[in-house]
Every structure is written in C-alpha cells, then in structure tokens.
Amino acid sequence: MKILLASPRGFCAGVNMAIETLETAIRLHGTPIYVYHEIVHNKHVVDRFVREGAVFVDRVEDVPVGAVLLFSAHGVAPEVRRVSAERRLRAIDATCPLVTKVHLEAIKYAKAGYRIVLIGHEGHDEVIGTMGQAPDAFTLVDSTTEVDALAFGPTDKLAYLTQTTLSVDDASRIIQRLKERFPQIVGPPKDDICYATQNRQEAVRILSEDADIVIVLGSQNSSNSQRLAELARDNGIRAYLIDGANEIAPGWFTGDETVVITAGASAPESVVQDCVTWLTSRYGAVVEERMIRAEEVYFPLPKELRGSAATVKLPMA
Image (tube, rainbow, N blue to C red; front, side, top):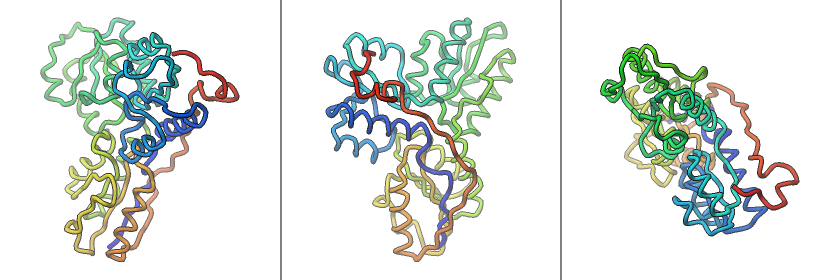
C-alpha cells in the first residue's frame, strides 16, 4: 500500500484564527464562555472546547446577560449582533475575513438596489449569516436547475455571490448558467470561494489521478470536506468522509491500493496522523507527502483580543 498525503490539507488561516481566538478568550476570561454555533464544523474541535468549558448555543437568548459571546468563523447576521448588544454581551468576532468580504459585498450590492443571487447550501451557518446582511435582497440557489427556475427578467438589476466553501466546478457551472440566462448580472471582482477550499480541491483533483481510494478527514456538516469527497467520486474514485481512524473499515482495502489522505479546512492534523498510523500498522503502507501548493496566509486575532487591551474588559457588542 502507498499513502499519498495531500498538501495543503487541514486547518486554513480562518480556522486557525477562530481556534486561537477561542483559546485566547478562555485563557483571558475563564469559563463558561459562549460560542454562537460551532466555532468550526469539526466534531473533534468542538468536543475539545466543550471539555475545556465552552458552551455552544444556537440562540443568543440562551446566553446569560453580560456574558462573553464569541461569533464563529462562519459569520453572523446583523440581527445577531443587535440582540447581543441588547443583552449587553461582551462580543468577540471570530468571523473569517473571507466571509466578511462576502458580507461587505452583499451590503454594497443591496444598497445599490441589486437583487442578489447567492450560490450556496440552504441552512449552512455561513449562508444564514450572509443572507442576513440584506434579507429582502437575496435569492438562494444551489444548482443550474434552480437557476433555470428563477423568475427574473432582462431588466432586473442582478448580482451574484457565493458561499466560500463550495465546489469550484459546481460554482463555475452555476455562475455560467446565471450569465447565460441573465447577461446583465454582475459579480464580485474576485472569486468568493476561499483560497483554502480551492487549494484542497486542486490537490484532490490532481492526486486522485494516481489513487484507488481517497480518505477525507472532516465532519459530515463540513461543507468544504463534503466537496472534497464529492470531487474524488466525480473522478471515479472511491472516497470516504470520516471524522477519524475509528471509522475506517478494513473491508475498504485489500492492502495494495494507493490511498490519498487529505483533510477539510476544519480538521486537525492529529486525526490525519491517526489514519496514517492505522494504515501503516496494518498494511505496511509507505507514506509520500505530495505538495501541490504552498499556503502562507495568516489572519490576526480579532481586534477585541489584540495587544494589552485584551486583558481589560471587552467592549460591548
């Protein structure tokens, strides 16, 4: 057996920033500390912080008045910020800057009178936060079929945006169909799909050409992890999305396969190494790291935690 260890894989800059933000907040302010939705979509990360005293909530109203509340990497709607301020919560904003970019684009287009077509998955935390920036302006689609059902006309003022963790290929097809149906539609000057999502998809696309099986480490509610497994399957390769080595089934292997191992942008490296150990101990697998693209992106901590001011009382939301 040969293992091709995809690089880049695992944590992106936004996830690193969000995790470091929660770690720092716990260190400075103690526990319990509240987080609106999962800090990132990964079971191992969430379970670790629960053990350390973080409390994950889906309603701001469930946070005690005056407590510390951290907004997750996926971003929140203005209404969440309003209710947080109303409850005098001490807010820390760990929204990924690439998600914030989409929010600012949404506000800009809405103020200019555009109807906005958002390409994304219904119910995803990021989509909810983005649509919340201008609820009356948005229409959500996640397929070319849904684009074909749109009732807009040639005189409608239209713009499109995308969720940051989509399949690059799927998003391109939907954007192309939007432009065919509505030649007047405009979009952001720079692609909204995040660099890490694109890089991990590129690595799977290239490495799966030499693979029999692709194993993606990530949780089922992780959109970018789901896309990695789908991409491999679209290339005709068996692919499995798992949270850790305990989910590997021996029946997947005969022992002479080439196995690509990668991880979604919110999966820790420890679970990757657990899988490598599982395969090497049972099949004597040889491991080869394949670097497809280097990543050197870094996002600083939120302003609420930077410098010596972080040791003083946090500002109100």
